[in-house]
Structure formats: structure tokens, C-alpha cells
Image (cartoon, rainbow, N blue to C red; front, side, top):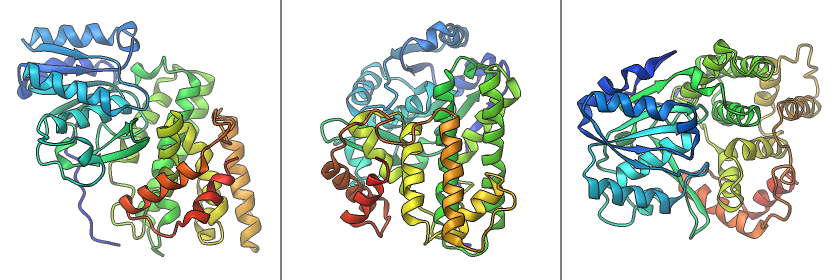
Length: 390
């Protein structure tokens, strides 16, 4: 096991009615908040009124910045930076899914940025100071409520990059499973696949020969997500199933799964980010297309991990492992059946991408491979993986 640093200081309030505590929990961070959220769902759900009333009760003034997109963009974050500076806010209250919390991290860092905010995302500069962030998670998927990572798309450059800093870990995270009851089943499935991808990236790519703690953690959470999603698809207001998905979403990408895991990398995310940047594909949907294609391309290099995935997570009892390639094909085939059964796309066309710009996709993956330190992907490798997505 490699040396590692695990840092996840977020205070989590989980369960029914926890938002009743939001005023009290925000009070230590100041008297003026920038309320960041998406479109109208926060208001139609009643959460907006609840948040505003609780903050006012504690004497906390609110400045709003609405309109975060599902794939959050740099220009909107820069508008938030200007508002936060002009209004001298003390902290950011991000109410929404991972996209809202991700953008909050860009704004929190940007308030103190002397130069181009995008320099933090392109790896040119490191974040040294940020505004405090309070997170109200309403669509679990990214673990952004408990981690130090935030992703933005720069539409001028068609790039989707991430910022990473311990200064951006939310101070407090509110997770009430009842806020997720109204999420459409399609987007619930996308979110669940996103959660699974966060768990499986390191599981598939580790070069270590012995990782029972990390493997067991991933296998338990992944099967929990599968079982919970099955229940939610039958009853969208199944509290225990929604709660299990929400907690898995918080844990999957907060650093625990890959802590000390030798060789762990995120190639499927490397291939998906350009799809979101260029075609505004829902992140979970893009991952559902990319991950099986990547597995097909790398299957003989990671055959034992794929077989283990089939046995432990997909529960393929009696899988014949005497011929590795055939066993891998069976596992990947079962994985694709699962993806289709929950309503996620399996091809670029199904994801709404009819004529992908292969040259631009190759260019972006090449940039990300260098930025993220993921080797072994030349132009021909990248094209081969995307070809398997067609």
C-alpha cells in the first residue's frame, strides 16, 4: 500500500429534516452568504424558502447567484466571483447537485485569485485561500460535498478541467434523502452510474496485488448502489434506498476508496470530460458510454480485475475463468446489460452525439492525460477507445 494523505474534514448532517439546522450551522462563518443554485427546482421543491427563512432567523443576509448549469461553466463562475467580491460575502452556500457545489469551489477560490481563475484548473497555479463553503446536496453523485475537487467547463477553450485544493472542502454538508425523491429516474440512474464509476476507476486500474480493504469497500458500496437503484426504479420515494444512494455518493469520491491504492487512475473520466465539454452530455451518461468501451480496450491487461468485478459486484456465480478473454467478454456483456436496464446510454449516438469530432476528442484526452499524469494513451489508443463507443 502506498503512503497517502486523507483529508475530509466536512461536517455531515444526514437525514430527514436536517436543514432545520442550517442557520445555526452557517452562523459561525459570517453574516452574509452567497446563495448559489441552479434553476427553479430549488424554489419549486420548497427548499429555497426553508433555507432563506432559517438564515434570516439567524440574522444572515443572502445574495443570490442563480443559473448553474448541469455542466457548470467558467463564465457563470466568474460572474459569481464578481458578485461575491462586490457584496463582500463571508461564505458560499451551495444548494444543489455536484455541479452547484463544484462551481462554488471555483467561486470560493476565485474571490482571492489575482490572475486568471482558469490557471487553477489548468495546473498553472495552486489555490492558497478560499471562502468557506456550506453544501446542501440535492442530487448525490460526485462526492463534491465531502471532497476538495471541483470541475468547470471553459467554453472558450472547449475544456473541462478540475481544480483540487483542501481549502475547498465544504465546512458543513447537509444530506437529506427526501430532497432526492423528485429527481427523475433517468437522472437518478445517471447519478448512480457516476457514483459507481468513482468507485470502479481505482478498482480496475490498481497495479497492487493485495488490496482487500479498498476492494471490499468498493464492492460493498457498488452492490449497495445497484440494490438501492433497483428499489428506487420501482418506488422513487423509497427512503432507505434513496438514503443509501446519497450516502454512497458522498463516500465514493471523498478519497477513501483509492487511499493508498497503488497505480489507481481515472481513465474513464479522462475520456468522458471531453464529451461533456464539447457536447454537454450528462456526466453519468457519458461515463456509461465510455467505461465499457475502455474495459474492452484494456481487458487483457486487467483481466483479473474485470473477472473479480463480475464475481463480486455483478454477482456472476459460476463464471468460467479458465479462459480469461472469454470470461472478460462475458463480464463486460453483463455490465452492458445492467447499464441498458437502468436507462443509461451505451453508445455515443444514444447519448446524442451523432458525429463526434475525433480530432478534437483526441486533442483533449492528450491534454488531460498529461495534466492528470495518466500514461499509455497515444493517439491510436484514444481513437480506438472512442471507436468502441460508436
